[in-house]
Length: 156
Image (cartoon, rainbow, N blue to C red; front, side, top):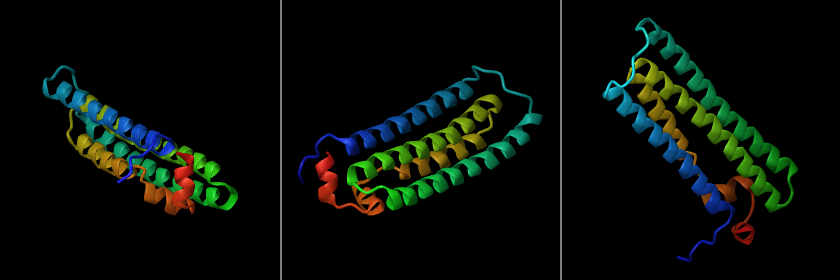
């Protein structure tokens, strides 16, 4: 297998993994804080309210992230002609989606730290798994942008 050159794909993949690693690190830190009881928790009456708000906002954010990226991909295919511009627009669409998904993860982890309720970690993990599955792949870029692998390699 030929060695990949550095370029936009490698940087996009590295950025995705770095953002994911940051989420994992925050999850571990929040688990340690709660398990060691280093913080005081909010009143139990706020727990159910935060759960409802967290679930609704998380689903809305994930749905919005998917819808926005899908809309941006349609715009890219309809308006952008050359491969370099398509790839740059795709990178921006990915970053926007990842930022939105990371917001949902952070929301759930903050709620977990505030309440100590492990249901928030389950929601955060669910969004994190979805986030991880949204990582860039060469095949997806070629297929979604309607470019050839040769055009993609020329951008590397």
